[in-house]
Amino acid sequence: MDIYAIPIYAVIEDKVADVVSATNGTSATSLLVVVACTTCVYLSVTLLLRIFGRRQLGQLTVLDLVVVLLIGSAVETAMIHGDLSLLAGLTSAATLLILNRAMTFTFLHSARFSHLVNGGPILLVHNGRVIEEHLRRVGLTRDDLDEGLRSRGYSDTGNVREAVLETDGSISVIDDTNPKH
Image (cartoon, rainbow, N blue to C red; front, side, top):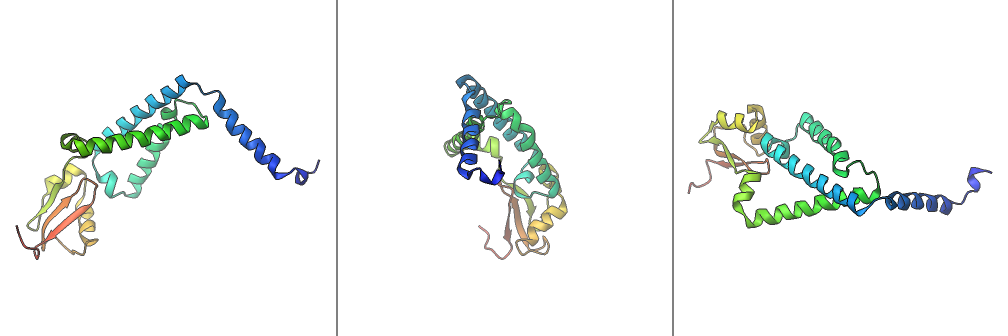
């Protein structure tokens, strides 16, 4: 039989049947395991990112990007507990979205919990002087700071009253021309 004689709808019907049959063997218990595994991975990765600093959030270098991609690849199978069905993948994705919404809701209602997970802003420059100890604590180099300042139009720290590493990883700058409060 000539391959071109097979109607396209028959090929599509076979593919849809494959996807549907791939979800038939997934039990409610195995989906609960997927939810539990996904929750554990989400909380663990959140904790690890908090421990290793916010550089991973706002100022990704090539190496940082590689690490983030590899983390995603490393935990993917753990989240779905080896269940490769479509339903397990959708359950894991829905769990991540629900957890993210729950964390956001909790942050809005608990400043203490938000600070525990997200940390607070960190002063990097004060009255034109770089606070080297704070740079080391957050894992930034002087070059990283200079790059952040240049991206905001400052060639050096001389006319910077304050530069602050925000909780999202961005650097906010207050220059000496702004009125002091």
